[in-house]
Amino acid sequence: MNVPERTLKTKGAPSLGELEAAGMLPGLEDLKARACLCIECVEEIPCNPCETSCPRGAIRVGSPITNLPALDRDKCTACGLCIPACPGIAITIKRVEGEKATIRFPWEYLPRPEAGDEVRMVDRLGRVVCPGRVTGVNEAARNDRTAVVTAEFASEHVLSVVSMQRGPR
Image (tube, rainbow, N blue to C red):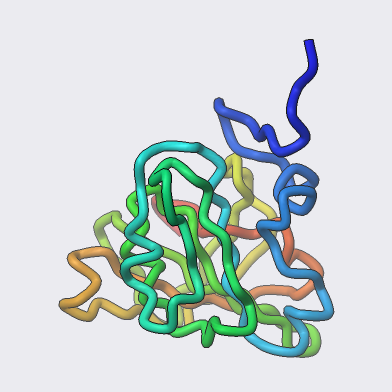
C-alpha cells in the first residue's frame, strides 16, 4: 500500500519530525529572528476558526474546509488572535532570545496560572521537559474564556515544549 507523503498521525500526538516534514513548524533561525506562529494541526476535519480569526489573512484553510491550515509567515504578525480561536488547542507562538525561549499557548483549565508562577513545561505527550515561569496571562473577553498564557524556559527546549503541566506546582 502506498501512503501519501503528507499523511500525519490520526491518533496521539504528531512527532516533531512529522511536524517539521509537513512544514508546520518554523526553523530555529526563524525563532531567533522573531516570534513565530506554530500550527500543530494534523487532522483533516471540518475546521477553520484559525483562518477566520486572522486579521491579516496569514492562515488559509480554503476549500474544502477539511484542508490543513497553511501559514504565510510573511503576512503573520504573531498577534495571537488565532490561539484562543483554535478548538483543537493546536496553535502556539514561540520565540528564542538568547538562553531563554518564550511560548504563548491556550489554557482552558482552572485555576488560571498567574504571572510569576514556577511551572513545569511539557511536550506534545504531556511529559515534563523543563522548568518554566509564567510571565503573563491574557484573559481578554475576545478569547471566549480561553486564557492565553505566556511562559519562559530554557531555549534549548523550544522545539519540544508546547504547554505546561496542570496541577500542583
